[in-house]
Length: 184
Image (cartoon, rainbow, N blue to C red; front, top):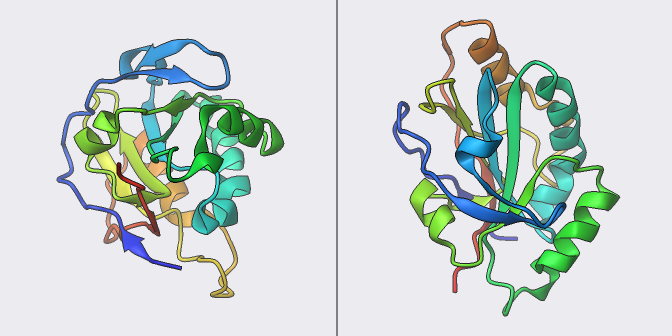
């Protein structure tokens, strides 16, 4: 299983805009449509990656815990579905239903959104503040498939809490590790 780290783009980077189709609702949304009143979490993920499968329950819990506090949650799949048909939009809808993902799960067919965000892996997490400036990019926590560290979401939860409660992030932001985006 390949381990690709996320690109640690500069904090303060403005969230790139997009217009992508949501596989849960069949509606097309922009970043502006989905951003939260307290900040926005953008997650690049897919259906088949073992790293995503390892953390998907925690992602759903984070979404449930923080949407009520004004954090917009957006998932995006950018994988090439010709080479990886298990990541097709129809299967994204099934995956969302099976994993209780009731936030937008967008399909980036052109891969332009992944390129604009410099996404490298699945899962890849980007947390933006109320001015759409990058506040956190990095890992969910230290847990990885097979490493025996319990899943907690501590790094991402700590970043979201710092954003909501107007605290600075003191700790080093570690890159996420996952499968590479499957480029065309």
